[in-house]
Amino acid sequence: MNHLAHFKLSDGDESLLVGNFLADFTKGRLSGRYAESIETGIRLHRAVDAYTDSHPLVLASHRRFEPRYRRFGGIITDIVFDHFLARQWPQYDSRPLGCFCEEVLSSVLQHEDLLPAAGRSRAHHLHDNQAMSKYVEPEFIQRSFVYLSSRLRFDNPLDQAWDQFEHNEAALTEDFRNFFPQLQSFVAHWINDNARETRS
Image (cartoon, rainbow, N blue to C red; front, side):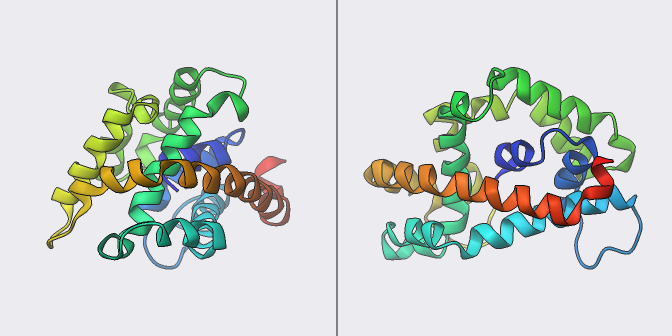
């Protein structure tokens, strides 16, 4: 999942939010460099990624793409699932999408002293450009594919992935609609089992 989903899944606990964001910039074993509540957020992010990457519905989404795109199925579904979450946002949150994005990014930026330089840059970019609110826009998703294609250090077809999305949109939408409530349930149980201290 991408930023919007990770933030939504950890919403309501500032330490989980910050840890979830830090996870993209934290590799290897956790060693107590952050507070335990922050490291719990990092572990939550990793648990969400592992659950998502192995889930039958997500793997079914990957198989919907033409063979040369399947290697990049995780990248494509990360983006389009956040697009579906943004489009269906009122089903999952009573706040307007823009208000939610402002709240969570402001919370992260209150702890920017914990972020590495790349993390601070990304957080400010997401906040200042209202980037997560744009996940609802098809044009933004198409540009995201092109941008990610240019970031990879080898030839890839991601700059043409929009065609795969359009061809499979209805089926992918249904995959997401069935998958996300299961992911929410997984996260609720994970937090109950692993993050009691962060909520007390």
